[in-house]
Image 1 (cartoon, one colour):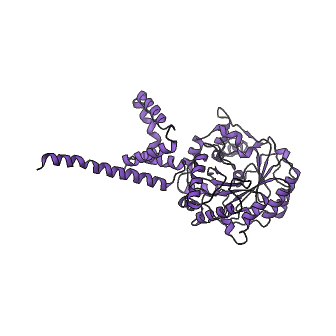
Image 2 (tube, rainbow over the protein chains, first blue to last red):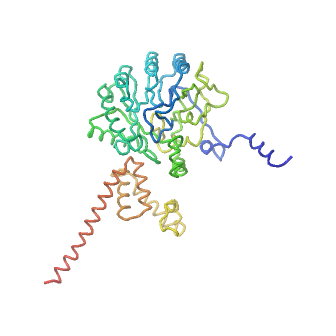
Image 3 (cartoon, rainbow over the protein chains, first blue to last red):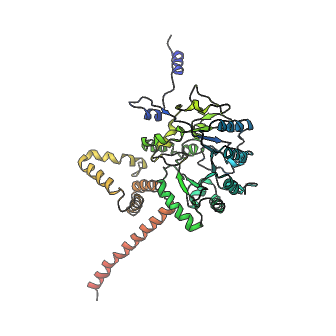
Length: 336
Length: 110
């Protein structure tokens, strides 16, 4: 039998074509693969609710989002942490994770298990009702606070995060400094900068130096380190790229800047991402694309044996060029 | 109507190579070497490139060096300072050429 129907069936039966990124990992046009090492960080996205709606947000987070991690998922995350001492770090993100009703309990219990805790903090949530005590809470539990500040200038930051955000952010930094953060001691305050547009971030150490000088001179505030993150061509930032007709050009920029030296340090190789509903992903970006883990692997956090994920195949797509461009990009900043 | 300057042309700059590959290769090596960090940082050289592009009114170079400056962590505030520095120098250069008129006037006038 010939004709369009059998041809369609044949196409449907075939494996999907490998992404350009997968082919870049391979050689001679064949797809290559990326494999994880041991999982050392459990990154928990407790929900998409945020007091801000930033223009680059890969989570599409905003005050109107209703996705919040339910109790059974949060308990399952704590259970996984408790059963796996090799998970050295809990990385809490969102949305604004502090808006989750059990945020403080999650942090305190993870610290009680002896794990390092990183909180992805947007600075302005400190000014939401009931959250003024966050700097003191972070300090009391020895969290590393990773704060969003796309650029040290007001204009650039406000264009991305909303009018007035810069001033609030500086005040938030001041309050963290007053609680002991960013003074070179044990309380680590990290700034995260990302480009305010469709271009790659600057060299991390250069921007750290400029930001340190500017914030100290203008505002008298300090921090311990600055990391740069490349904007991911997905979700709200991806929509913006398409709207202004720059999506293809940005993808070409990322692809042209592909740097093989970033592969060993990619966050997906040592991190496991948990979605608000308990679904597992290789990273927060795959989570937003609802990719899950590779076929045959556990897909939910409930009762998870993390050891089953060591050496797993990582699912990749063209968005992965965002993490391998230039000096690379990860939750910990530049890689190479 | 066809435009003389099209931003898509920038990607075809290298097409000029075919007319004289040897000289083009020399130009490419020279250009790359001149923009390598030395006593001046990459960022300083990018700013020089931007200011020269502005003063020379080259839309291709302004496009390229604006994007490079953004990737060096600079913003339009930085570039505005650079373009005013370039513009004020151009103003000074224009005025300085007035010395020629000034000197000619001294020579020929009573």
